[in-house]
Image (cartoon, rainbow, N blue to C red; front, side, top):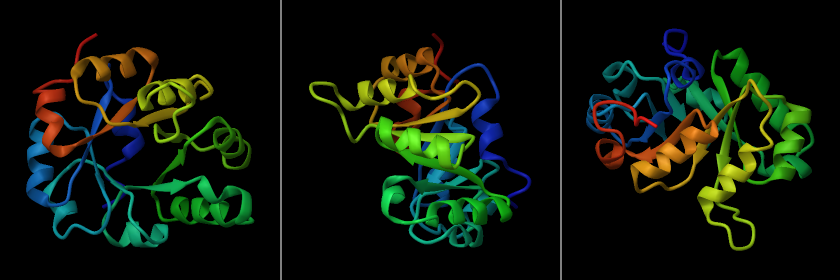
Length: 197
């Protein structure tokens, strides 16, 4: 299951930015795929989802990577937030996910977390969160600021609310590889094909 669908491959292939749809059931996954999503993200186990879609599934649920693997996910999100007080816990989770064949997507919220994550884990995929804007900047600008510190060769996924195609195009022009959107928004943001810039 996990060997056939690589999250990293899905978001790095092609010319444009990939859209990752947040889904809660197999029907929403089917619809999102038909509308142009290139990956799915779930907050927990969704019965029948791995069998219902060829798209890679990113797990953002509670529990260790083994829970993501058991749910049929192809990748899992590891949050960098507890880095400063958890010893080598994040490293162990990263190693466990890799041993299970899962792509690891490490979430960072600011430059400090990004620096520590790059030093300690050097992950291939980073999830840039817009939930810590600096000063007067909005969440989209926070993600773009973080992107400036992502080394070449890393894949960047934007975790920021987008409401129009122009924002998707802005992220794409900046070099973001994928963006997380609500399943109900895929058609409006993408349509049948990725946005052109």
